[in-house]
Image (cartoon, rainbow, N blue to C red; front, side, top):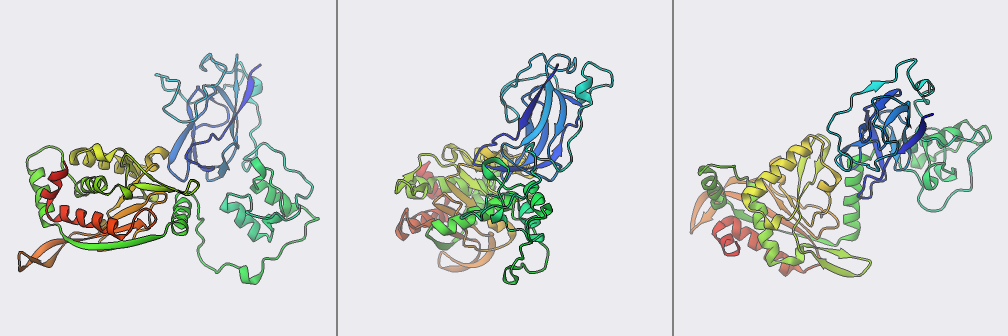
Amino acid sequence: MPQVMEFKLPDLGEGLTEAEIVRWLVAVGDVVAIDQPVVEVETAKAMVEVPCPYGGVVTARFGEEGTELPVGAPLITVAVGAGADEAVESEDSGSGNVLVGYGTDHSRTARRRRVRPGSAAPAVAAAPQPAPAAVVTTPVATTPVVTTPVVGPVPVISPLVRKLARDHGIDLRALRGSGPEGLILRADVEAARRAPEQAPVTVPAAAAAPEGERVPLKGLRGVVAEKLSRSRREIPDATCWVDADATELMAARAAMNAVGGPKISVLALLARICTAALAKYPELNSTVDLAANEIVRLPSVHLGFAAQTERGLVVPVVRDAQSRNPESLSAEFARLTEVARAGKLAPADLTGGTFTLNNYGVFGVDGSTPIINHPEAAMLGVGRIMAKPWVHRGELAVRQVVQLSLTFDHRVCDGGTAGGFLRYVADCVESPAVLLRTL
């Protein structure tokens, strides 16, 4: 007889605790191979296809598309072993993989197949499908789940669970969650709503939310909100800025691109200037270790840059930017931007940055006071480059002018260091030959 294996939502890394089901890639009754992707989920970092480490017949799925599941919650069950299907690979144990591209390699793409009536595994093929709302296998008790109100943060992740509780006047602090580590699930709220012994809890009028469209603060938007809030809570930031004449930089770029070969972007030139400036002022390529009460100066520049996508603004990271020339930087910026807009960035592509370059000039604005990308120590903002009156060599002329702004963590350095960094960047923009001294 086949053995039914339960595959749970794996830890996708980078501190992610939940994921939303975007699209099921298999149905109950389908035959899957080891490491075949079975579901596409969206985390706060990226869209990820999750492969199943078991080969066999899908007997159950947990969660509808659009449902948020915590890490460790069941995703599917699979019947593995002899008789499951002749197309399933002979291994009856899982590969242990959790992400596409790691571990077992299968040169032949698995076809989506279903068990035929009367085939070798009738018991599996006839396995009933769970109710659409099921997301965990823990049975929901029919008795009230109200307990003594908890002190501290309410153990609930999903905004949908919070909304359901609010709509029905249920105090989440009075519930005992049935999920991992006491996590309150939708089933717990539904059980409390059905329990006759529980009196409705009226939300005070003062706490009532105003009318209007409500957008859940989850996924990418939720992570951005938390990261920016943490940055403002923990980092005593300051901003300095300067206008710079970028005419010579634009001329240098035009000359580079006139000789043929891959095109050099303005962002790549600014990135190369940043890495040279960070070599002179390493205080700004650092992070603060609060637990050790130390400033950690980092040996490599992993340069984050802002990229606009349909999911919102994301910050991919160019690894070891200090070792790249403008051509290499241009190619990597283009590659990561394309992957970001396709929604295929891996969590590793969005983490580990040490300094961020924010070209908000693409939105047609001149200046900004950026919020530092925690836990980094600084961010350089670049406004639009536009023709303006400028005194050049003692005469009024029309020049290409850009505003540069540096927001920095005042714990890692004082204004002299920050000003020196920004002035060096501006000098390189105004006279690219200055950069040649550091190449």
